[in-house]
Length: 412
Image 1 (cartoon, one colour):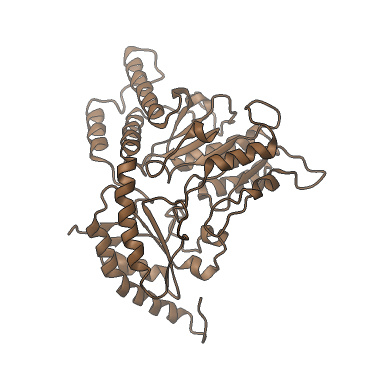
Image 2 (cartoon, rainbow, N blue to C red):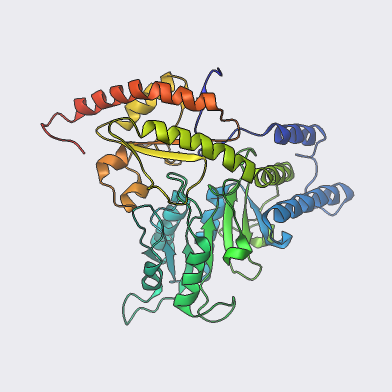
């Protein structure tokens, strides 16, 4: 049995051996530092050509055009560039977001409201975290007769990074088009739609043009590329005002000397993730089902998503009655199991899941969660190891909860 069972692929996934090998070769050949792809000499033209090839490979794997791919440092920067870029492009405009978005979207929207004068409207979700389509028209409508601020963007993630719920993005975009009555970009009243596909890509189908998106963001390290590479797919005529100045690289959206080694690593990781998606979805889905069937038999353990809801095959999300999540994670950690309570993007701060709160859960269950996210290296032994360790870990977590909730009858 391996030294540890890694069940936190939604936080970050190990670099693929093929990607590591390619990067080592690129760096050994000096690709990482001796020529700037913006330079006009022969060495610069060489790496510019390799950068163009990487961009074309990413585009082909995603089914988009190469000129639509904008390279970034990761998913958080990509989404932040979209939110800030649209807030700057439409001063005083309104950003419409779902309440279960990644902090990269929600916090960027808050910052845009505080610093750029944007308004923010929030869509409704149902008990599974799916956008209530009937709330789209209301969110797009002016808040009162005197307020007709144009909507600058609608942002809905394709799949949630905590629970794994999958949205019907084609339906969401269709509802935006019906609500505005404008379907063609460039026409007055047209509202662009952004989707964060960081959690979805490589796990479920992603169709930029088929869904009718205008922009989407993705991250490399969730796919087996290194931390520090990501991308936007941006429709050619969508205006994103740059957040910083610079040399105008990446269509002026994200200036700075491009990381050619990172771009090539991202291209290979995207190709591999998309190519293996269907086979891996079947394999990981079977492991997820095994995990959920077993834990559902434990007292006070609940599967967060209702049966029949579209979900990522790799994410199992649970909540526990009267159990302290921190104690549960610590016990699993000591048993050699890496898992999480939810998003790992809050700098380790323990707090109730905003996703579960939006779904209608009380604060107690929203503080007592476990996310097990599977990946290409997850084996049946890893799942069995978790199932063997969970009862004792849960018993300790309940003792910890009782120690901090001594009021008689206090429970959730």
